[in-house]
Image (cartoon, rainbow, N blue to C red):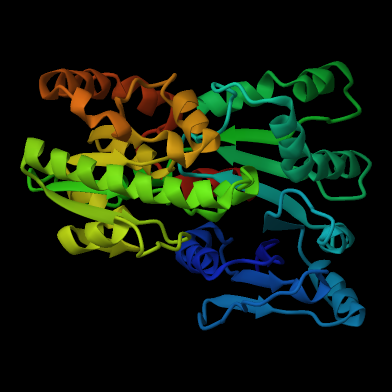
Length: 410
């Protein structure tokens, strides 16, 4: 039996699309599991103050599944955990008001939190677009207030700390090292105000795929559209819909512009268009999206595979999949619109500061010059190597999960 244990904590309200993503991640997490041990899913949803609608369905014999129902069972679990030198858990990172008890349980069980970003550069808002004061205040109380409360509770050992943070992007690590919290921690040795106790750089999972021999077979027959979803739920978390009538009109106009943009791209490049739906988005058939479904191939859940075979990859918003397209040296375009809101546009503008990927406004497609566009795309591709070195490959010829295991179980 191993000295270590690896857990996946299941504790929150997840839409079915997120649960599906959890299922997909299990094969990777099993590779992280210590020798002579099994990955455990610790389901703490019975201790949440939220109404949990979706249940995890356990069917993998290589994974332990445990769902405590009482404090007595938690005490028994704590005794069982004492035979291990360390118990690591993947997330959660910070609490909201309804999951406070979950974090107290994690502290009681003496669980060490680890966090992994194995995708690459993480697109995030950096105020490239100026927001008004009301927007900023609203964002703070929606997303940052409980984060800061959790950080304070972690500092005083009420909540567990993030023991190890594994990150693929050197740019992101540099940002973390330049925060006030990190600088304060360097000055005051007995208190760690920083995001995580230990930060380590690893390779991207997309580099793992290359090492695994997954074929990158670019074809001049396919243009892949990676859609971020006009009605993606994250948009409504960050940008309140004040005028519903205007929002409905914006949706219809957005898909109309997107449709004519796709037709133009098809004519310019003579490629077959494959439109990849976002799994978390509900698509309304009362818009031009219905026409898109009729005229182009529409796929769900195959974006990862389809990027392998695409010659040109077009993103309609922020997506971690851009890292995969870059490491495979794909031609990339961003197709944006004012209709998708400040949040998505700001993420893209922040990202393109690091790598100059062409951006097309789908409301102004008459301004597209194919020769100029191709020159911009080629200039961008020529700059991929520096981005890959800084954000996707840290050490050659080693899988990211092996890099993590070397640190956790040394």
